[in-house]
Image (tube, rainbow, N blue to C red; front, side, top):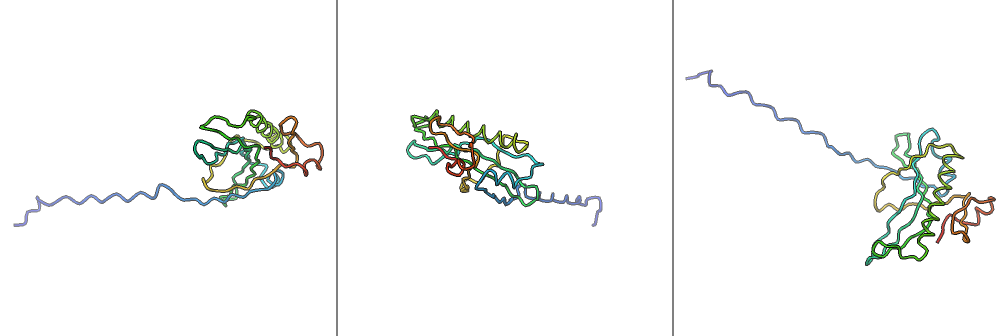
Length: 178
């Protein structure tokens, strides 16, 4: 006997699988040897990212040497997923179980601040860039080119970065302290 009143309901279709939530985006980091070269290459109509940054070094038995940097970046607008950057090293700072180990650690931090002040003024006032204090997150094992700024010199007596009085001073002194 074929009774149509006892038919099974239509099956409910399975929901479609959601597309992958994460996409892998390849980013190219393009480093510049000089801050001036970087500033010439970036788009002045777009904000630049710049800030003082601590780059942690390896920790060995509680000892760690960090690099005190001033980082300048701009994400390209051309859709090529590139980050143009210039990293300036101000100083290194050694810590023992998190506490400063170097006897002159306060001078090193002050030198770092003085470099940041000069770079920020150069970007915002001289070049007219909109400076946002931010940075692009970078892959952990990526090695960056260390740059320099031709208009900056380290004053050994004051233990601070200063604006060079002439271009010859800038060529003689690199943008690196102890």
